[in-house]
Length: 193
Image (cartoon, rainbow, N blue to C red; front, side, top):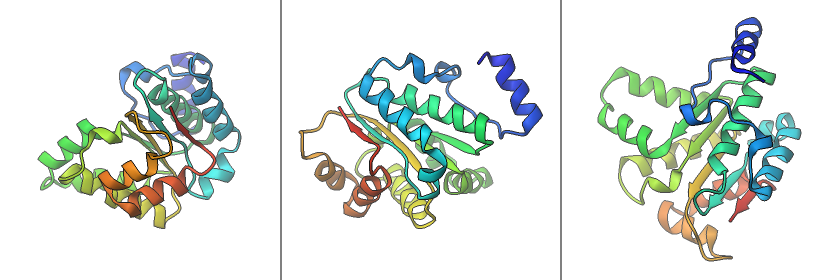
């Protein structure tokens, strides 16, 4: 779908505006070159309404340059346009830093409300937000609140983990409850490369 048509559909049918990084503005699943990532994303889109209502969304973790973030952006674009779904994109390393620096600003609480309240939240590069500090605490709190509300979070990370040890490594860095929420939320839609 061309950009002008996307904008026209948004204006006509009231799809909430979706702010994606410029490199993903035209993301399409057909362009995803990693077969596992593309298959997972396609399967999720095919069952989006059922799975999202259960709080389920993909967890895409693995080596860099495997098209994980691009696939997440493609999912965000499709559900935003076709279903008029409010999607919030959160570039974890950048946005957590901005929120930390502006935490006493009223816009901080508005952004936090959007992170918790969006129909679909995409957290890109969550692993870059380390094992301590504001960013980690923010991710853990948002994950807990969205899990309690059964709101889906699509997670991506560039990190190579030992096969079979993925959830242990996530638990070690972010806590057992966080890892359990990711594992449950990504049930059936987890790709670890």
